[in-house]
Length: 59
Image (cartoon, one colour):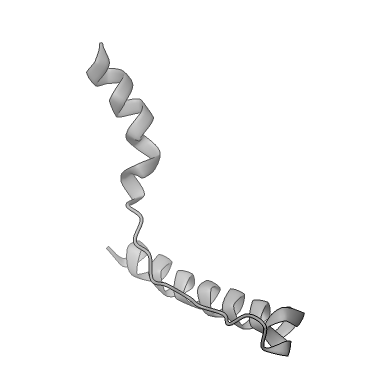
């Protein structure tokens, strides 16, 4: 559980970093032609196992 909390904290910092870098360097955003939007997204960690599970089920 502690690893999950650490991963979520690091993910939060990464998202913030990418957001600030993208919006500060993109000339279209700087000129006002585009607006940076950041949407929360949840992706299950089990997603990487979908193909393996599917192959077991289809047999």
